[in-house]
View 1 (cartoon, rainbow, N blue to C red):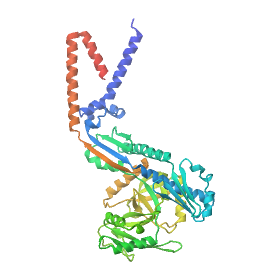
View 2 (cartoon, rainbow, N blue to C red):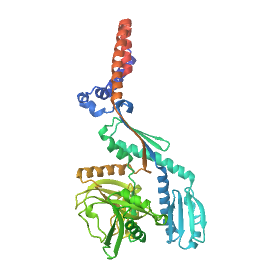
View 3 (cartoon, helix red, strand yellow):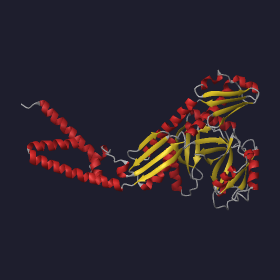
View 4 (cartoon, helix red, strand yellow):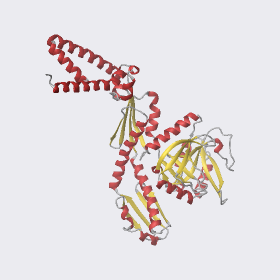
Length: 484
């Protein structure tokens, strides 16, 4: 009588062995270039393979340094906005201005110094985890707060950890097999084995893109920009590429007239060099900044506000912006690719979450007639005039950059949607190391390993059969099962 337990063991071993063979088929077929010969039923259900590392099949090795101080300064900006809003809502104090000083300090200035007393320890209780008081000037109505050092360390750690998760999400969407994304201090090490050389640049652009989206208002008609453009005209000999431009527009309902002046040049670096040459008293005020947009020739204007379509090269122009962002990409709930109904140009449609929608509606309603700059990765994408209160929590980014090819613009839009959906990096990245590993040595090592395994296995099998005969046959079968 046959022992049933022995039968059960045979069946179990057989099923395990069969499963091992089926799972290994894609890997073995790939090694020998026989993918097309794999039966469809196996191809459809078993796709994972044994992946070779970067050293064996080549690929891309990158090291990025996370600019953690930007995460700290961004948090200080957000806390400034929160403090202003809380004072207006809870204490009914409207004449107060909070701004970041340096990376981790917040200076609050009360127009009525007596209001400073209302910003007491009870009011600041909710911010004790983040902020410590540095000093008060009751006569001037000034309060200085600083982000707590422990919280600064927490923000920096979060920036790196979140950076790893964001990059991992982006790499996964690119379809790179078995990527490695790891944290090392303030650095992120990325290894992408098997990546083809022709894909290197595209992948690097997607990984390193900060995708920080900000909405800031343009301070049009400012005395500072009148002074700046006058200085640009006076330094024409030193900076021959600089020109002065003029903008004018009218509010749709009230017919209020707006105007603005700006500096422009074919080379952004020349404008930045000019700004860097300014004397201390002529520097951009701390609560403002200069933004840059690259515009088409048809969008450019001369000193009298007339269009200049004869210019062939695109121009960089400046905007005088409030430094504080009114809205950021952290409120984005979804993004997708669309098309402008008039120009048929690709665009990215944004949908904000409920909180972002409320903020967007509020700031648009309070700033009708003003220009709002849409800034992506420190570059102004567009600066449309707000004609009415915008509800529904939706916005759009027109695409194109300096590219005229529509297919390239569409790919640019798809890439932007991909990074926005995976989330903006909490801090910019600086690439500190890059190496492209070729597959030649790795392929040679793999080929030699295959040959050595086949030859070695064959020698062992033959030796066991000749020397041990039946026992050797059993040992050979056991060895093959172990390999599987």
